[in-house]
Length: 140
Image (cartoon, rainbow, N blue to C red):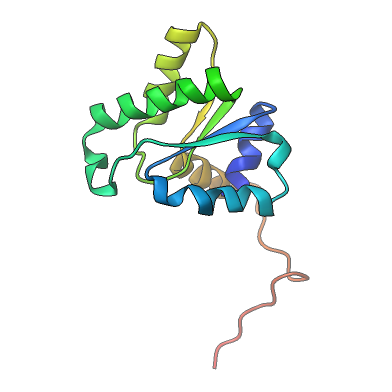
């Protein structure tokens, strides 16, 4: 989540999280506080959709778009972070709907693509964790 929040802040000054269930709001707010990002955090909103229901893409996109629009208009979000890896194929569709509605592009970050893309970039740059931070694992 931390890396994703910083990705949102690389693209805007204020971000909101769109998550699946109300029950995850406190946990994700806690992450924002612990990362020291409260001043850049606009809001967190839930689409109230069980993880099992995430397969109904049209419903998920509609609910996500509704909450995303509120986050932008009411909370001042300038970018949006999808707070669940179950939001597959949602980000691009919601970004398109927002741009059509608002007349401005708003980045919508898919956690799956952002996380995978970050790892690929590390491999391409031939980077790995610092041994000053993470000791080498030895086998028994």
